[in-house]
Image (cartoon, rainbow, N blue to C red; front, side, top):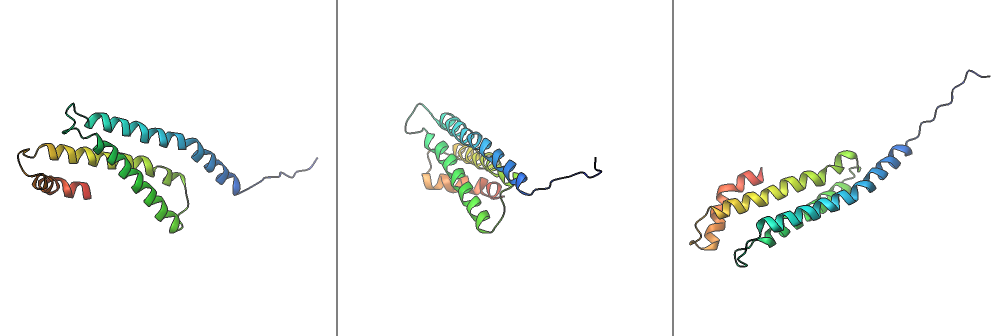
Length: 134
């Protein structure tokens, strides 16, 4: 009988558990993009094909996806490790990016439909450009 206790400390176990968590979250991220894409497409759809903005919903989701890939790429190039904090990044981007799409459409709908489309876009961006940028 000895009075010694053997304890193990390994750095690898944390990385292994982090990878397991990431693998489990991949279907959640894919599912959230699909659900939000469908929601935006249905929300922006109208019965009139000319006035329908379903492509805006798809475009909002695609732009969020592209910004997410760009953000992760820049983080990895700079050497930022992939941690649980960086896993939250996609969900924050979905919230902010899609919210901006809803704000743009709402402001565009408030402009005068009789005006030139270029003028309507200018008025929309004058009204909400700063709030989206911030």
